[in-house]
Image 1 (cartoon, rainbow, N blue to C red):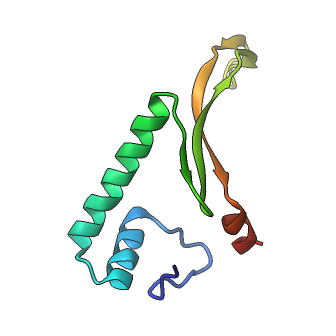
Image 2 (spheres, rainbow, N blue to C red):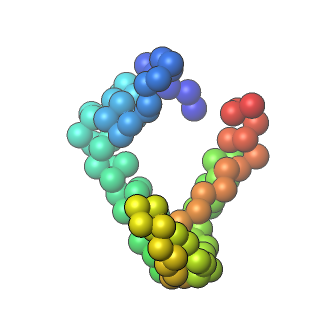
Length: 103
């Protein structure tokens, strides 16, 4: 699916408002409905990843979580050594089709 209303300008990022407007334009749906659907999508992905699950969208990619090990660090303002605790972080792996369109 392409978004004909999106034209990439150097230095301009695609944000949520622009994405909602583009989806609305390409589907003929109201911007309010598109924003509600996008919010629902993001909520469901975050909920599933938070439970330790995986969300796979064939061709687009997969959202998962990964464990980051504890590691030593340094406070940038004082230079003091600190211990950075282990934590879970979200991860996105692009699918084959996604990778082929970004080359």
